[in-house]
Length: 263
Ligand code: MLT
Picture 1 (cartoon, rainbow, N blue to C red):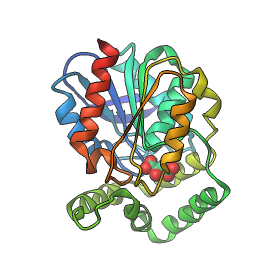
Picture 2 (cartoon, rainbow, N blue to C red):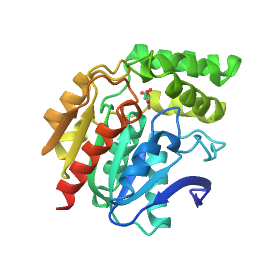
Picture 3 (cartoon, protein in one colour):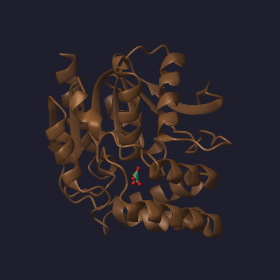
């Protein structure tokens, strides 16, 4: 497993394929394993980099609290370590929060953005309270409590997705409690990126699944309205993890957009 020490953390990542780099940033509380279908397919066409965010997968959780911005800084340090000047940045859900933070920090290093099942605004008060309640539950019950809460929103076809459910449960349970608790805090206090949207100067693809229970499709429509030159692709019959449940449609939408950006 390749790792790179960035910001005193050993970041684990997959780096495969040749050509223009595409960075895939996973959601919470997952890992780069959730990009497997895209890594396999898209690396036939381009260089694909899929890191484990801090506190997830095989990347360490730092001892001190962190913010979404720190995850974006990790991504930029990884670019430096891998000799990447500019990449197409694709983030799903929390990965989208990190992608927007990365763009805010270093717009010149982003060739294009792909924002999948994510939003630009902050948490509602209720959502924030739910995150703090979950931190307490993780302290008492461990990662299974988090898996129980998150899994029902991840897939649309509950009956046909048993295999995916058990793979994702294993990914969640393998993550560290500390990493998950810090991430919940980081998401609860994340700043809004709404003011950034009209200033995004790069081609942007928004991917949304209308049946997603975790992030309402209205969030995607409002990003589409606010970001100049944004395109939107809707993928039906998918839950929150649209890239897994509708893997080939998702990968095809990304490839189509990448070819448009690089043409
Ligand atoms: C994710 O999938 O990354 C999370 O659902 C994002 C969130 O909890 O806001």
